[in-house]
Image 1 (spheres, one colour):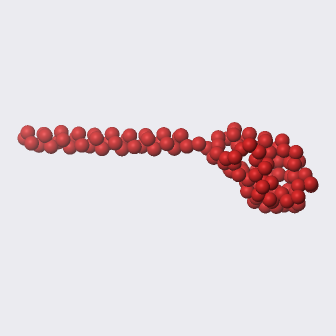
Image 2 (image 1 turned 45 degrees about the vertical axis):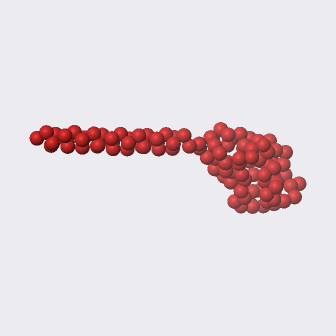
Image 3 (image 1 turned 60 degrees about the vertical axis):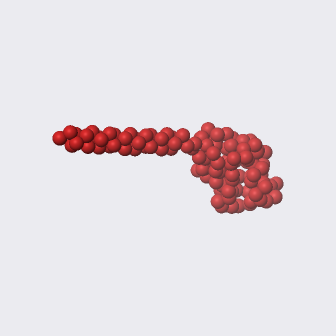
Length: 116
């Protein structure tokens, strides 16, 4: 009878350890997901001044970003000579993404900017 009691006590300790490890791992992964920064991924329609020679030039697009090196503008569609549909990507959170949009709006070569 003592052997049976020892086995069940041993088994119980084993299972408690397994459950504790599983709960700890779940808690760690939930914290990692919660700590992941939000990403900026917005679509914009930008109308430029007619004096911009080549709005699809990568150098021009990067110059619109100013002092925001972690962000990128990609052309989705060139509607006309001065209207582009762009994708803005980069690190978040949301308020930093909107700071980049505000900086683009202030650029003298941008007549209008709409988020979609």
